[in-house]
Length: 58
Image (cartoon, rainbow, N blue to C red; front, top):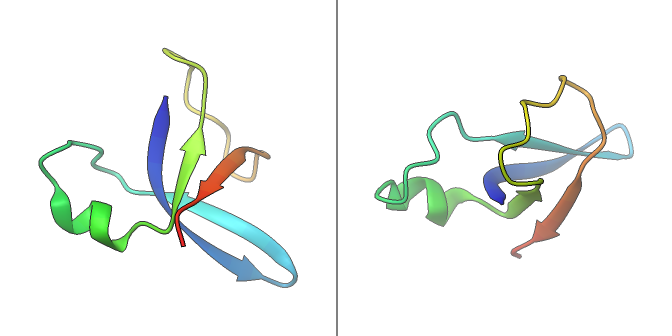
């Protein structure tokens, strides 16, 4: 699964912040996303600050 997110740099570390709404009809969020968080299907929510894999879109 992929979760749309905004990825930014904070003190030399990349931080991915997912959008709260992941509905496919939310085109504005897709346009604003610069990364996709990669996760296993049906995975539970990750803890804040947990490491994750991200596919960069730009």
